[in-house]
Image (cartoon, rainbow, N blue to C red; front, side, top):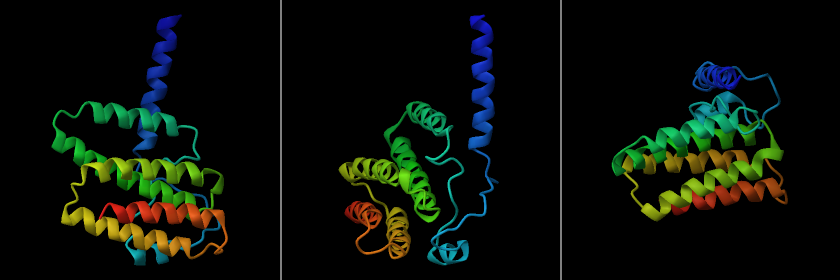
Length: 167
């Protein structure tokens, strides 16, 4: 019985991993703040395939933690943190652009926590600096679509301010 449950868990975890890393994720046609063409003009490269609004998001987090723990040297860990930052940024842009506002506070929090860890290390390369400036530009573009008195605009401003501190 326990062996069957373990096998079922492993198979479902494997299937979830295949879905998570599927680059051809298709999003329902929903109303967005900014069209994909406008986002592409700002330099945005695409959404993350698994976002906070999906039930399999915790599996993605577990896989990321496992992957991070398997890295042996500090240089690889630092590089992986920037990879995670890019993922968190893409998740944040998805949540903002598709107006999944019930997840916005959590998305901004996750993004800011990762930024805070990187700020403490303060190892920003010129390539990372370019990406970070692009993040700020994209977030400002999305923020401009919200009303000045909106709480969502303030949350996005928190992300912008924290991002600017990394430079």
